[in-house]
Length: 443
Image: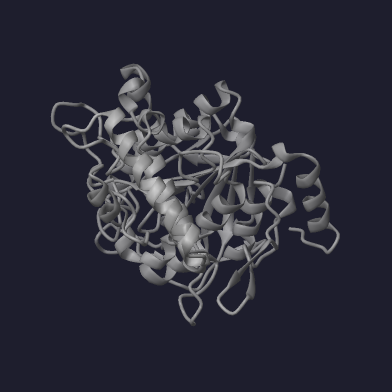
């Protein structure tokens, strides 16, 4: 569904139109990055965020503890990068080990889903009067070509908005920088009736019954003329923002935009490699959108709080890992084959990790003290684990990392100086990321 955070309401506009219901950061380093970006526009990249709502268990994925009681049932396997080891249930990703960097020393202070989600996605604790934008919205704003493309700058597949709505929104950037949503209710990701693949549709993308392309374009031409006349007579920034938002929404009705979201154009054999569920098909959609120039795509795995494995952890994580492995690895393979992996940074993370200690229900509980996130693809120096946790997984032993550093590193990998400022109400300057890029992770 379309993003309920967008205002004014796009559905209302289309109803009236009859178009349907639609680590480093020394003072010397950041200026050097800014000069590099200015000198080479190709430095600006695409980003794909693989969001693991619920808090994925690092101990059963990317920071395993073999031989310890906290290690659990899974075995670890080697990757293509010497010394870097993953869970046995991520064999396809292991083949991409040389392009993957695991941050094993992330430490935060928010163990609640809502608060942790806000912190990780915005870099700011959920308090105070400022409505901070999601890092995705901020980066999409910097990377996007808003005037050049009918496609949105930021598409989010199956986000769990109800957990922390503000963490997914544009905050003080304004509604024109909000994401376009696919499956925005976090609906179950299984195959739909009559198809073996999950359906990913952007609401209000199809014309209503009885309205053809030519008729729709005539109506849009009429609407545009009326809007233009109004804007000529009424000059205010809010009116211009209103028009730009509706113009973008209307552009998404174009045939080439609908084609970008039409996964039936892909061979079944390709769709099967990604996996038939919402996540796998979302990864395929991410590849199609990146090919067409969309700068930021997010794909969520796990219906609702899918990674919230307080009970029956190993059964659930094995299933989730199977989906993750197929979708993510195939995405990397296809981006590489198309020459796009070097310009696409992929980020894997959730709102916190899970306890190394296994509870009485065979599950793992919330654990922000020492957990992992993963970077891969363009701008990332792969084949490594950054930081280290103790043998029992309970504490960070080397290179403790805060979320601001992670977001600053992602920003730098994308060619966006993390000290780039936007202005909140009252002309207060706020940096995209309040942290230090980790030099060891940047290619």
